Length: 248
Image (cartoon, rainbow, N blue to C red):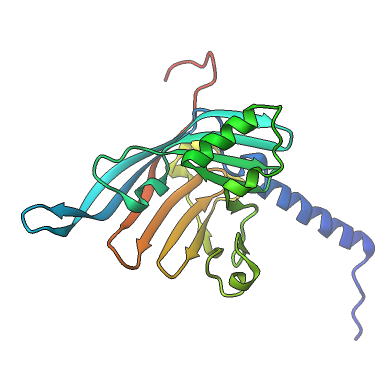
């Protein structure tokens, strides 16, 4: 028996459904970056400390609480920029007394989230706020962190030779269900899924857990030589209260 081809109407309906799903997944709040939004993490971080008696470096492990927060935002043309204080990446090479770093996350349209750190973050922030400056080469100082919408097997932010190997690029290694009830401030998530992203190189690797509508919920960094490791998870998420909102 010969099967009939789907009608053009069915094809159009399917295309619209896929487009609608992608637009929901890659909505502007895919990574919530409103001013006042914050994430608090708890980590187990390993590093080396100098032993002045022996002259050697001794391994040490600390349980740390680390905060990431959006301190300011600005929109310009098709860009949205969020100035960030602190991030899980601070703990990649932790030393006692280290303070939270300065970061900038720039969303281009609704899909690409670029990460800037340190001086690059401060320079890009100043450039975006100054409308007299061109933004043509802004992406040169940042790295593509999230390419929305995420899906299992997606590869991005690497050159062609490494994309095929899944190294020196971000690879979505898997996804699983996520229980949003742990973080009520996030509200109702459109796609309560936890995506596991990996960036693997010869000297080290990073594992990032990302939930659309909530943000980074986990981060691991492991250096393959000198001891430097961190494994952290989200323990609290919050947003700034609207002006005039009643106190809890």
